[in-house]
Image 1: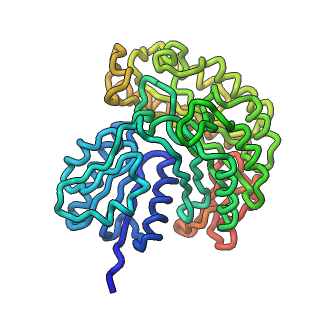
Image 2: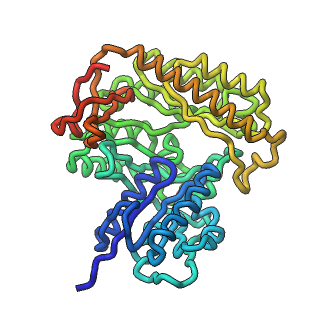
Image 3: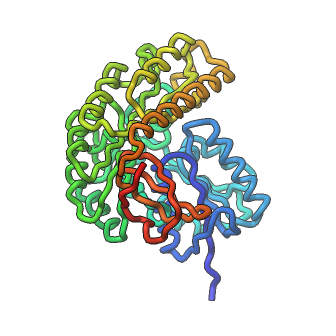
Length: 424
């Protein structure tokens, strides 16, 4: 009897990547592969890459080197955004056997059947303009929360971003398919679904990237709210110009959509927002935060922000700091700007020194820490509903309240994947 081949995965980047890695894993397991942990020996290693920062590129190279030292005879497959953007560059990394672009990653099983170690690295990719279709993905068994991909690609042209080049045009699943997937997840015992996409609020454009939106994100959340068995939904990230008052009001009235928004800002300076080619001004952002807090004072609001963007003088950075300081938000995800090939931002002057970028990152991370401490202290002593994860971490377990405060408690098996009233 032929020995089962084994496969191990490593994911770099966003929640969308996690959902796709999980789906690729299930596909290969259905093809007869045995899933292994990435630290273990496996016949095939698959790295699902990101390209948002230069660090993700470097990490990919380091992982390939680690595999080469540990398992030089194993096959190494690189997919994801970095693989779509720079397939030739990746194929030249010693040890890489296969590079799969955006259109080919979901055909990974077929590629592996035809691949042998020792051949020169094979590239299977196409122009991003040629990519159509939507592949539904979700993560299961990896976490208590399941990431469900409902949208892919982006039609925006932010001057710092390579994602449209890596993932193609904005396109979505159909509402009826998303609802069917949610029902399937509910049947598996999933309690919380995190809706993910590249530009989630742009949901509704057909799988072929049709410019005309046939459905809307607002209609999607209304439909999902009716799915029996799913007790919690979170919206992973939504652009401020696409976060309508209707969506905010619906979440405020819903018992299933959690009081938690993650809204990218990127800069608190209107001048920098203009150079970034963002589709809103800071005044609109402040209005969104104000409405959320009026309707849900207990709501958590997370913010993405980029520091060190070209042209961000000390004055413009101070505008960002002061603006964030004034907002009633809960935490920040701070990204240090890094140059990406073929982006408009490369033409913007002056370039900010790397040490200044890192200092600004540190300043905003300190602000984020203080914001989260203050937000948590406002709920101290309150009882809130916590969904506990099943991992035993040295006798402790973790979970999140409805409004995204992390709770640590002594491990009890009966509380795993259960929603429990707990004092903050």
